[in-house]
Amino acid sequence: QSALTQPPSVSGSPGQSVTISCTGTSNDVGTYNRVSWYQQPPGTAPKLVLYEVSNRPSGVPDRFSGSKSGNTASLTISGLQAEDEADYYCSSYTSSSTYVFGTGTKVTVL
Amino acid sequence: EVQLVESGGGLVQPGRSLRLSCAASGFSFDDYAMHWVRQPPGKGLEWVSGISWNGGSIGYADSVKGRFTISRDNARNSLYLQMNSLRAEDTALYYCAKDGYGGSWYGGNWFDPWGQGTLVTVSS
Image 1 (cartoon, chains in turn cyan, brown):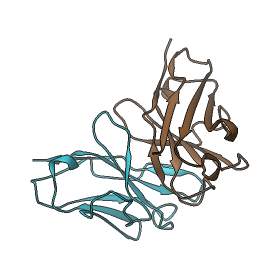
Image 2 (cartoon, chains in turn brown, red):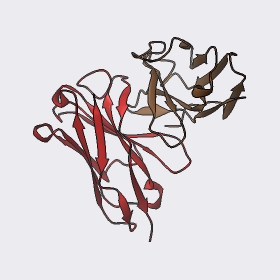
Image 3 (tube, each protein chain N blue to C red):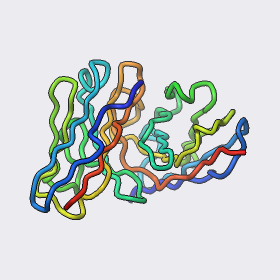
Image 4 (cartoon, rainbow over the protein chains, first blue to last red):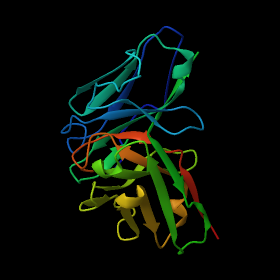
């Protein structure tokens, strides 16, 4: 199972919006609506920021939103803040009864 | 507050074995599936294994199938990963994660929260 494809890096100034794509196949993202996203600041454990494509856990700001179209899911961070600087990973269940993560995207706040 | 604390990592020679543990607290451990996820130094995340609430259903990544065994002890609120025939490519920070949905590990769930991880280094 190959990792889902994410851009290596995205950047934006404070207040701007950035979008991270997560491209899979019909064997994972394209079939299952349980795509989740994780935020990992340097030296820390991953933290869930979105589940089931677009649902936010309690405590996650509504600046974080998600969507999916076909084999590609997306995470958008609106009103970018310095504290959003981190690595972000998507994840999906697969038709092989396993889970696959994305390649990871480094978000830089300029 | 949910807490997951991994232990058991260390330096091990190729071909040897290691057993990781994850102590859980702050939730009804026997209501939830659990997972192991690993992250090689400087690299991305890889799902390793998942186990249902009662241990009756288990899944593994192809990369560890036949070498790793996941188990749990609900009486001790603990999750384990027995790692045999270790290879250099198994070197990683191993995270324990609670299933965010419920008692089954499969079907497309999410991982929430995660422990801080325990580092496994396979080297001669």
